[in-house]
Length: 311
Ligand code: UDP
Image (cartoon, rainbow, N blue to C red):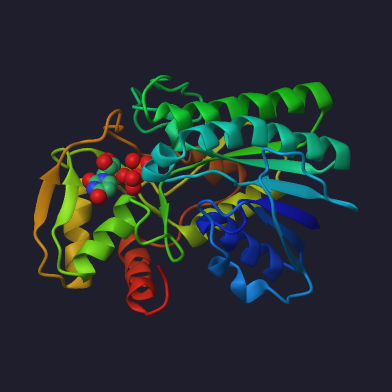
């Protein structure tokens, strides 16, 4: 297939580019580089199956020739980033999704939207299954990301119903691994960075809020299976191994062998209290389940951050 990956220079987008090239597809990577980084795709430059276009997907997208699939991954994705770029986050989820869907219609390409567990907001159903509609504060600071992705899902389904576009929606739960930016503000790189420097780990609130962390290789495999499937309703992909953030901080101290302490800081507004994916749908229809344990994934990630070069 000839595949466009928007946000292809980001953490997940760049891993997707690698995976698709490995599967012998031709990849066009598009990114405006506000949170993406060319270092993530530097090793692909010069590969005949890969090309990079610096472009903001909220503007008209022109691609010559045939296109078989579009994977729409462009968006700031860490709370710190979307608080820094609130309007860009809303625009890429709305206008950017519109442009990418328009291109899919023109090219008769399959379209896969990177959606998020954030569409469930601060959930009142636990674990979260795909039938749950969510509990999102539309006007809070976090709403810029949550509502942009909710709108993107709505638009994707409208193009599916109105224009018969073959669409897929993946709801991505917290994912981590190499190529996250060390200072992107998310719990995994922040805690690893703090632990490696012997600084206190900053746990927000009392640390009883939970998250379930998935290693990126598992996520990418699930996304590829979804792309090839014929499921046009949303599918959760994540690792259901739920932990409190305090437990998680302690685990990072243990894995890094750090002497860091833990300090408690103010909880961000609208920070969800619990999060765990119900993955029965992915298990049944994609025959997918996570393979990498949290310990193993964290060890690999710490190793990456310890080797000089990144960040
Ligand atoms: N968190 C924390 N300390 C940090 C960064 C994050 O305690 O330095 C908490 C954050 O409040 C949230 C959880 O860790 O409850 C996961 O945060 P992250 O930004 O990784 O992702 P989110 O799931 O909130 O999008």
